Every structure is written in structure tokens, then in C-alpha cells.
Image 1 (cartoon, rainbow, N blue to C red):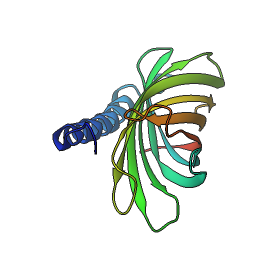
Image 2 (tube, rainbow, N blue to C red; image 1 turned 60 degrees about the vertical axis):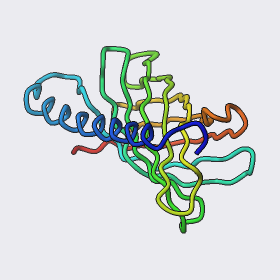
Image 3 (cartoon, one colour; image 1 turned 135 degrees about the vertical axis):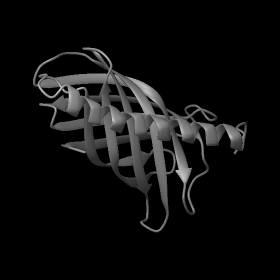
Image 4 (cartoon, rainbow, N blue to C red; image 1 turned 45 degrees about the horizontal axis):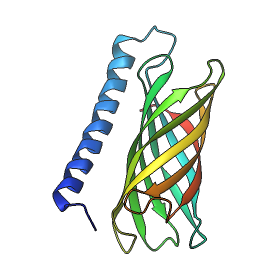
Length: 173
């Protein structure tokens, strides 16, 4: 991998794992201590979707978890952990963090956000690269989550472009 040391990748992965762990602990605390509040502070979604690589015209399937942590009434921090494959013989794991802004409130809450993710190869896959990611989505009654995204590697901005869509359903952990 060009321009990134193995140590910085390890630190990034450790920070993402700590982020997911703290999100799960935060959810447990919200359930235990704020049981009677109307709005939930942490929402966890099982998600499936797909990604299209524009340059080489390949389609990949994705499945995993997305955790939305409410920071304020309009901001939420989203952690994601997705398994990705294009031919079901090689898999990779994608972790990331995105800051989202809710555009409106109600039963249908549109949001827009930007963040960073990283592809972690687990078999014959693409190299590990940090990826800029922007998304646009809807929370439907806080039960369904639909998002579309654009992603491009930091080292090769706009040279390799990916677009994707995810559909998530709320789960209780």
C-alpha cells in the first residue's frame, strides 16, 4: 500500500473496533438508564446492499451492521462494518465512520453525511486503502434505513469511483 504505514492501518483498525465496542456499550447504557425516554440514542441496523465500481463496471454485494449514535437533535455519528464480495469466492471487510446531519425531523428523517472508511482484505481482494465516503439517506420511522453513497480512495481521488446503496432494518442488540 502506497503512502501508508502498516502501523497507521493497525491504529485505524483498533480505533474503529473501540468505536464499535463503545457504541454497543452506549446502547446498553441507554436501554438500562434511559428506558422511559421517547427517542433512542443508539440505533443498530442489519444492512444489505450493493456497490458498483464505475471504472471496471463490477458489482459487489454487501452485508453487515450500521450503528447510528445520536450526538444531538440533528447530528449522528454512524459506524459501519460491512462484509463485501464481488464473486462469493473472495471477501473483504469494510469499516468506517460517517458524521450525518438530519435535514428534517418526523417519521421520515432525511440525512446527509461524509466520512472515511477502510477496506480490510481477508482473502484475494483489493489493497487496503482509506476511502472518502459521502452518503444521502432516509430513516423511516427509525425502523428502516435507506442510504446511497459515493466513495473514492484518498490516494486516487476520483480515479476509482464507487456508488452504492444499502437497505437496513433495525435490530435490538
